[in-house]
Length: 156
Image (cartoon, rainbow, N blue to C red; front, side, top):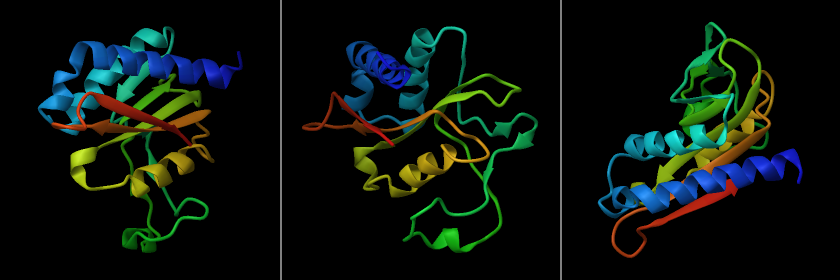
């Protein structure tokens, strides 16, 4: 098994635990932060020896920023601003106070009406300099009646 497939397996295992234990959160359509927090707890169980954080905004001691649009991205007006933007990844697996960045996860609820284009663009950017995360995943929480109790995982 490749390191990438092992990482994907672990993330999927964390999602499976979330669905087994906390699917009610999808059913009742709670805040996205509540869902990502619970998912992060299960990610931590899978990635022993790594730090797992939600909405982490530091690159060692500096603020985490994305100074320009990721490669091949268009369509969002605020990318026209060339100033660096502070970013807060939903979930990261890393070593604090180091440059070791393993995994970044961005999530979106299906009820938001947002297809996740901005989050996917951020994920692609996080895989490049200066962060160089090994892997990035977009998670779609399917919430509410008919869509409830499903989480989609997309690797980027």
